[in-house]
Image 1 (cartoon, chains in turn blue, purple):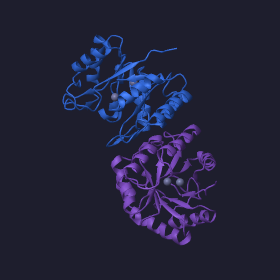
Image 2: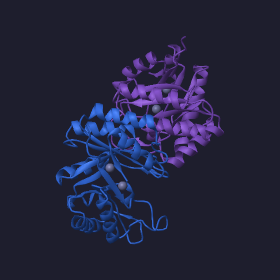
Image 3: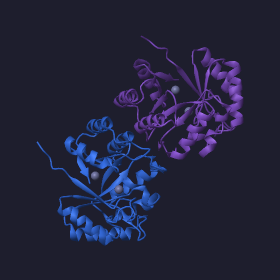
Image 4: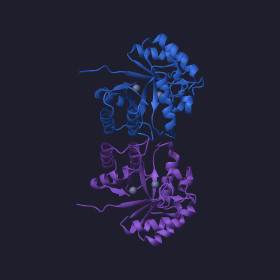
Length: 226
Length: 226
Ligand SMILES: [Zn+2]
Ligand SMILES: [Zn+2]
Ligand SMILES: [Zn+2]
Ligand SMILES: [Zn+2]
């Protein structure tokens, strides 16, 4: 029995700039064009960050609105997932675009270290973001940077803060957080199957970990991010 | 083959007050008296926080100095472990007492959520605390609130930031962090054996998890905190 593999394309991300890679799409027009190429090549989810004109991360709802409009026009049927990640803003500004009712949004349910700082997702902000997603009918992709984040998502599912079937993403290869580690990857899958039967999962590797995680995910029956 | 089980007594902790439990030792004199009872009952490590007179957490090196003096006098040979945990101060004040050269000190190597806030251990503070422990010959007890913290400790051991053999503690049962979970506990042990052969480990359960973790630890060959 096979199930279709969902390919999620993370356009832009929050960190790389044109200086790192001239191909990184920064403006909304560049993002739409780049996503359309991926969509025509088979990607079905677009995980989107937005940027200021100088390339720095933004969480401006107006930019997200224009991006959504462009994607709906040029990639009809593609699932649009907005990032509520902490690089683009602090506190509730991270969820200011959820009222645009994207199909999905990323949701971190715990805190962890990043290469040079703490990735802060305090409990009250997590609860607020989850409630906004319920209010606007946005399906969360739960970002698991560590094992306890899987437990926390299961707990929030049981008590109704994250209703319905879960979609989780394992993130590996972030310096000072979880490295790319096969035993941990296998245990993540086992834990998802044990604590949240029926959940879908995908995995994202950072930098050189990306291709490794893609291969592991596809072979293990998960979805994948490119 | 059996090995001796180390019993670590956590006097006072950082949260409970006399209002919660009149038996909680708050003053240095009360702490010394209470530790002496545990020492005579067989405890070999004293994990110590200090408090202000009103019961709020403190990281005052002068209080730690008086506690150390009292313990050395009344509990000769007991291993003294100071807490550098984040409830008692922010930033480098958390490590201000390391120059007193306690035998051990707790060291968190990653960040995670606590019941109502983020437990912040930014990478540069972790590195500074680890370096101070090297400088003053203090053996760290590495507090693992999540799986990636074990990986991070192993990485810091490999690159020399935490030299020598490792002593790690699994902490379970903190709300919004890792729950008391048997499969995770077993995987923690496996991960320690895989990544840091020869390391010693212990486990601490919070609240009702304490007795559970004590039983699991002793049965699995770890040390225990009471
Ligand atoms: Zn992202
Ligand atoms: Zn994904
Ligand atoms: Zn403590
Ligand atoms: Zn201990």
